[in-house]
Length: 194
Image (cartoon, rainbow, N blue to C red; front, top):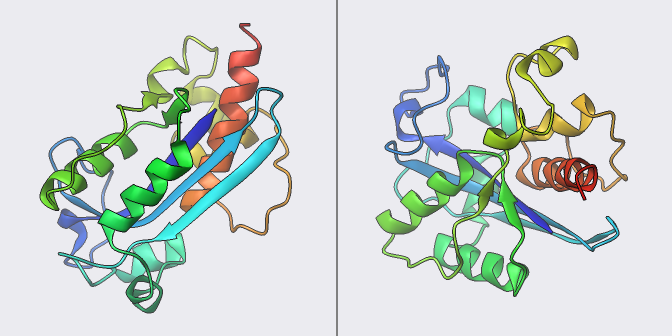
């Protein structure tokens, strides 16, 4: 089981203003700054993680509010890998695993970025968690009751009362942290229905 997360700059945020909400990532180009992934075995043990910083292509400036939120800097991005190399490494990480998940918009961010860069994604569309939350008994109220303003992958484990094994990753809005939160949460939620 694998979870994938991205951190990105929406093209609508390049003016530096704080975003008033999430962009419609199905139609808005979002430049990926970071790709994170986490993999568990069939018993819920963490096998490995992936943490890739992606070099800038079309949007090089990170608005200050986004840099503060994600911890990403322009200097870190310059030392990253190209999106093409990032997709290749993600594909290697995924391998033959067919249970690949993302929270909601990350699949669209990844596929739209690939199109803009003329990259053909070598893997199938990921399964989306957010549309299944209600089916699994997790509501927006559960997030709000825990003090979160929105539903997001990085806080899902806290909503479910799951303690993540220490990895040294920073908190929410770091792609690898968010992927770890997501994969442990999916394992927990799907285990209840096995």
